[in-house]
Amino acid sequence: MNVFKILAKVALAGLMALLCVGCDGRQEVAMQAKDETIRKQETLIAQDQADKDKLEDANTNLARQNTQLAEKNAEATVAMQGKMNELEDVIKDLGLKVAQNKAGTGVAPNGDVSIEKHSDNNVHIIVADKVLFSSGRADLKASSHPMLMKVAQAIKTKFPHNSIRVEGHTDGTPIVINKNKYKDNMDLSMARSRAVYDFLIKDGGLPASKLFTAGYGEHSPLVFPEKTAADKAKNRRVEIVIMPSDVKVQKDQLAKK
Image (cartoon, rainbow, N blue to C red; front, side, top):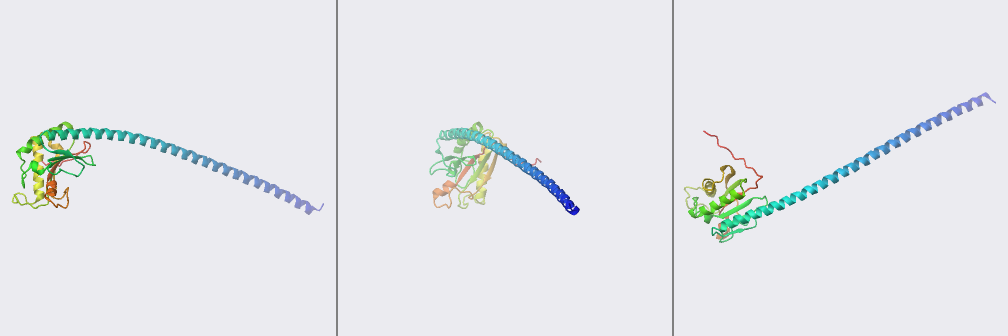
């Protein structure tokens, strides 16, 4: 046989052997890559399932908490309604016309007092100005004292931990009577809220640390625009606002001299 042919055959055989070795190597690499991909996919699937399980647990816990919260809110609503009913009875016992009204309604025409529960869970005892004051004045009528005493007692009994905001409100008619004493409606509203505040503390025995005042003048009307005398009468009022027990009010403390 020609030596060149023999050498060619040997070389070809060697090349084929090398090619086969390379083929096996690529197959092994491919198999390893496939195995790694499968492991990653399995890890992702397992993590996804774990995340779904956690989400399901979280949703279950949230649903349980919402149920508990709804039950507590229902109980609180029933308890609050009971307290409001007792407030109404206290005021009715004094011969005053009182009603529980929708929030923002205020005292009904020819009424004296309204009790409202607002969406922020504040309870508003709204007293028509005619029950408390003479026109243009901020001195409490003596006839208002029994009602305010009863209200103070009810607050002490039913709302012992609540902060109380005493608000003064007027209509939009400019000051005529006592103009030399009250320069405008804001002045008058602040003086009226302070008069009720002082009585509730000094005579009613409520703690000063729980009460504060606010004067709004004509700037927070229940009826606007004021077209009739009834509209004006509805806007002239003092509101004793009982705030939720979880609302804390930090009052400024005057430095002692």
